[in-house]
Length: 127
Image (cartoon, rainbow, N blue to C red; front, side, top):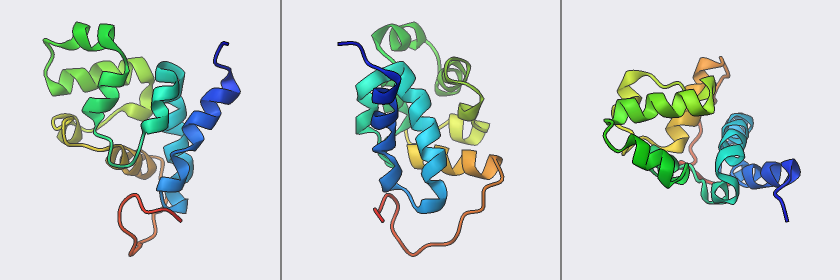
């Protein structure tokens, strides 16, 4: 059975509840972009997922083709493949092995001008 657009939306929606309310839409939108490329693998996406793991999800051909690239070049390739929402500043791109999906979501939210309330909850806590 083929994966439908609704399936992709449901896969991506799973990540929403791992984020505070003000970041849920941004997290969903990024997760949906990924779901369109990696399908059900995106169900494993959490705030603490490192970008290196997300790059790995893009598949062996993607990763093998990028093996000779440094972290910044891998992120640039991901930006080209996944769109402008994934454009990161160099200081984040240079540490793809430690930058998390949460940091990406926060960066995109700031870039889009979304306000983020201070919260005493820990990263990735559910509400």
